Image: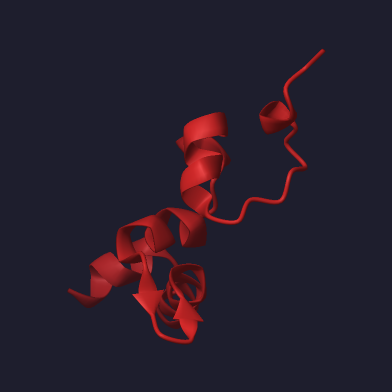
Length: 67
C-alpha cells in the first residue's frame, strides 16, 4: 500500500510539508518564496504574501532586475 504523503494530489497546509515529501521541483515559485517569508503576518499567510510579490515583479527574474 502506498503512503498518503506520496499522493501528488494531496492538499498541503504548508509548502514545507510538500517540499519535504515531494522535493523542491514540485513547488511553485510562490510556494518556495513563502517558505522564506514564513510565517507571514497577522491575517495574511506567507503564501499569499509570496503570490503578491511574484505578481508585482513577474517572478523571481523580475525581482532580480529591480535590484
